Image (cartoon, rainbow, N blue to C red; front, side, top):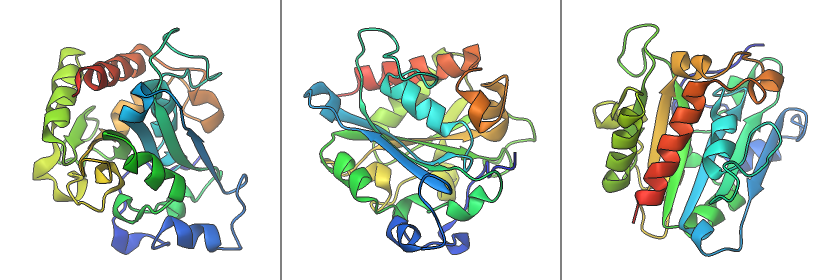
Length: 240
């Protein structure tokens, strides 16, 4: 299964926005791509939304992480851990066997109405992404997370929680294309105009699953997957 595991800049995107992608009559929703979201009524859930703008086969592993960080097991959507809390989530997923990279819409051009609506009503967004080790400025095989976004306090809590969980995490501000600082970035379109994002290297995401296919990932999560999920959820719980 061919996937797009890294980062694509706006200049290389096929579509200038989600709206443009949805308008392409050569694409079929449910065959080429999917949109999944959950909007909760509970007040606590409106504090945070977890998103994966490049899920499925675009940046492999981010859909499963999005569900788990939001409080749902990726295999069956059972609340995990039981009793919550659970959070709003939204994801866009590439469903193709090959060529999912063509479905990448950079985060500053994400204009999906549900994604924008969820972000706009929330205090914070946590956006999940994938990059290559080279794009992160790291050696081949490096398992790491670059933590970015305009919410520096939340980003700091994420970095600390990930580090405590034994996951190499560092500030993304030195990597401009991965820093997530633009006000137009979907992670920063919150009530307070700031959010956070995690750029996870391909080797780290590969290590999270025993089977790397779209059908297999949700059933074969490894301990490092759940360590990252627990760290992200701890940072959300501690955020103010």
